[in-house]
Image (cartoon, rainbow, N blue to C red; front, side, top):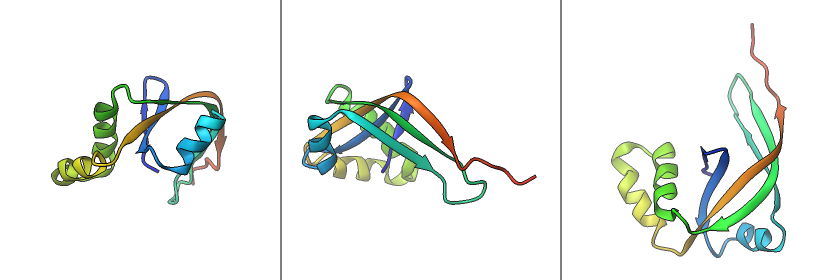
Length: 105
């Protein structure tokens, strides 16, 4: 899942019809795991409250796309994503647990 860390929150742009959106509407308490699959293996588990919003939808979605897509493909990918009704998931962390962090010395 593509995400953006900004202003002390994790932001995820997703289609409104996704199961995660339905579940968040029913229960906004969430956990998010972000980790790497290459050495040095690092990760974090975040627990917090999720909020669904359309405020700054285009701006945040574009920033997310820019993180993951080559510069030449950003416009095409962004326009493709914005064709379907979207919503932002804003996750405000309440608790974080560092996992699997180690570096070879």
